[in-house]
Figure (spheres, one colour):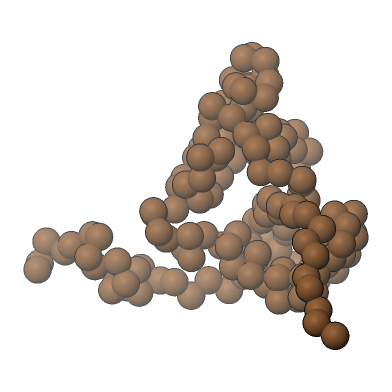
Amino acid sequence: MDYEYERKGVCHQFMMCEPLRGWRHVRVTTRRTRQDYARCVRDLVETYYPQARKIRLVQDNLNTHDGASLYEAFAPQEARRLLDKIEFHYTPKHGSWLNMAETEIGIMKRQCLRGRMDQQSKLAAQVAAWERKRNAKRVCIHWTFTLAVARQKLRKLYPSIED
C-alpha cells in the first residue's frame, strides 16, 4: 500500500525569550502577519515586562518585524506608547544564527516538535507544556559566541583596521 501525505495546514510560532533569565514564551498562530507580530509585542510590553522602561528586542529582519506593524494593528497613540518602550536590534542579514531566539526555536523543535500534528490546538498544547517545564527549570542558553569568535567569523563583513 502506498502512503500519501495529507497536509492538514500550517501554523507559526513566535518565540519570545530572555536567555539569561531562563524564560521563554511561544505564541502559536494560524498565520505570520503584521497583526500577529504586533500582538506579540503588546504582550511582551504589557504582560511580561509591564514595569520595564525600555525593552531591547533582538529579532530577525522579517518584513513584519518593525514599528509599522504596530501602527497597522493598533490606534496611533497605542502604537506610539508601545514603541516608546521598545528598542529594536536586528540580527545581520543572513545571520539569524546570531539570534538566541533561533537557538531556542531549534531546541523546541528537537524536544517537542518531532512528529506531525493534525491540529493547531495540539501543537499549542504541546509547546505550552514544553515551555512550562523549561521555564520552571529556568534553563538558560549558554552563549559561547564571544567577541573574538565574532571577529573571526564576520571578518569579511567587519574588516579590521590592522588588515
